[in-house]
Length: 286
Image 1 (cartoon, rainbow, N blue to C red):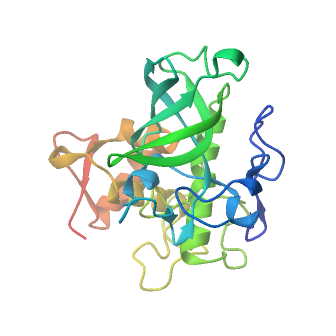
Image 2: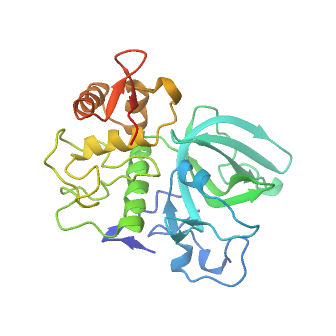
């Protein structure tokens, strides 16, 4: 799939690792992951995803094609922070964290071309973008990386999360209704994958209904920023103590004060409540 409701994927600035339009060069010649039969060029399109989406997918049997949001996933791109590096003789394993989960990324080393593909030279805490495929070995998932590069502007981290959310919503709920995105292209988020609503989108309070969902959806009528906080909390793994506004701000890209206001508004609506202190929130049973 080359576009989603008129939204065009970017080439993400890959040097030598991809061509324009969100595809990796030569992908049409590669078969499906672990499966037989050739796939069309469209089936080999590059999809932005979060690590949580990859971890939530369950392989029913060995060699099964990866299906996320009801659509086959072949080539993917993720953005995250390196937490750990484990160099081996034949590959380097990077443990990557994007705020939704952690996953190992394996980059195979070509001894004859060492240092030419940018695989070496990464350091812990550095943000990187990875292009590759989801793999599973002995029940443990990892991403087999075709190409990696450093992320030098943090805006790219937030942009990737918004882009992944947009594609998730397009695949699960269809194209946005006219004017439903509030003039923001790629501004939707996604329940069940990270957040809902556009990162950095303006406006709190009800009355601004997005282009997804229906009248029976609990988020119907919520402003984009309110949806973002609501869906973040819906999928949060904070345990009994809840999640702090600082973690929410870090993961969603919103300002801490904006997160506080949205949490207070959701508390007034009977959705959230404070736990150990005024800055730690949990969701009531839904």
